[in-house]
Length: 254
Image (tube, rainbow, N blue to C red; front, side, top):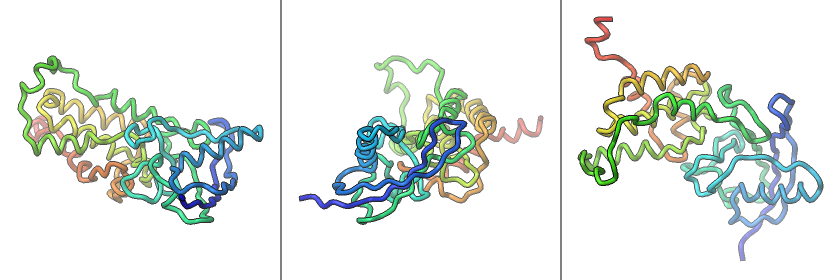
C-alpha cells in the first residue's frame, strides 16, 4: 500500500492581472506520495469547487515534462527541488509529511501576471518569431538525407533543441534574463547546415528582440543552468554572444 502524507500549501492568489495578490494557506490530508504536485493541486481544486470557492489557476498540458506549459516556483525554486524535472513530474515522495510548500508564479517583468500561478509567457513566442526558425526551402521528406550531418554535430544540436520554453531560466535569474533560452534556440539551428544561410541575421534579431521585451542581461550566475529541466548548459550563452558579433573585417569597415 502506498505511503501517504499531509501537506500545507501557501499559494499566491491573484484574481486579475491588475489586482492585488496575496498568499493563502491550504491543507491537504492523506495524499498518496505517488501523486505529482500538479495532481495535488487538482485535489485542492476539487475541494475548493465543492466549497463554492474559486480554484487555483496554473498552467499545464501534457504533464509528461515535454511541452513546457507548466511551471512555478516551489519554495523559491523553479520547478521545485528535484534537478532535471518539470513541476508536473515532481512527485510528492520528494517531500516529508507535514511540509509547507510555498507556490508562486514566475517573477519577471517580461512575464506579466494573469491569474494565480499563471503568467503571460508570450514574450518567448515573440523571440522565436524574431528569428528562431529556418525560412529557407529545406525540401521534401525524401530530401532529408541530402545534407549530411555528423553524429556529434547532430547530438549537440539535439541537446540544445531539447529546450521546452518553460521560462524557468528567466524566473531563476536575478536579472530575469532569457539568455539561456535564446542561446539554445540559436545553437540548435546554428549547428546544422540548414541554419547557416540565416545564421547571422537570426542571432542579431533574436538578441535585439530579447532586449526589446524587457529581459535582463546575463551576469553568469548559472542559476539558469541549475534549474533547467532539460539540463541545457550555460556555456551556450557564451557561444551566443560570439554569434552576435560581426566578423572582424566587417567590424573594421564599420
